[in-house]
Image (cartoon, rainbow, N blue to C red; front, side, top):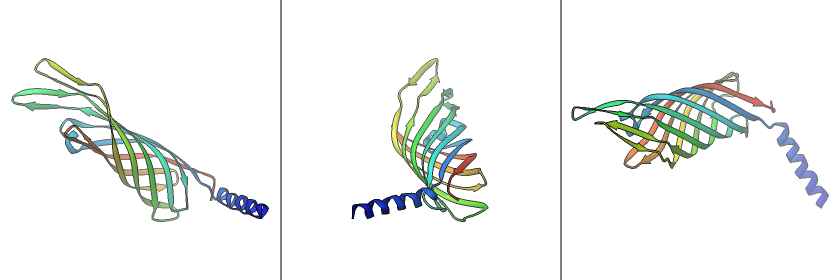
Length: 185
């Protein structure tokens, strides 16, 4: 009985390993602030790195690191110019992706759930500087729509990183990158 159980387990692992697809992706993009941070930032750069596994031909699961660096802006408040520093967002997420087609041009939808750290902000005005050096981590989610063609990967994603104080932190990113598949079919 033990030999039969061991044989069955090895056979199942062998079949699974034969069709295993390891995914490795990276890319860059442009981040557009939304929510309350849109009032104090103008936009910035986005980058991501992911390592995943193709569960089936249509479904991928990956660990995703997504970083956004949003550049500050200026605002006139009561006749006085206030300058804002930059905001950095770093997200660690579990990401799921579903492909709508099996070959060639492959549009997909994805959803990432995880933790986002919101970095430092610097505010200058009236000859005074206020710095918030710490960071705050929040639960976040990241739905995306995109396509994969060969190794080319493009998507548009919305990141909601919760609130810092009374201000909502979110952005929309347009990303272009590479997504490699190793093993499997």
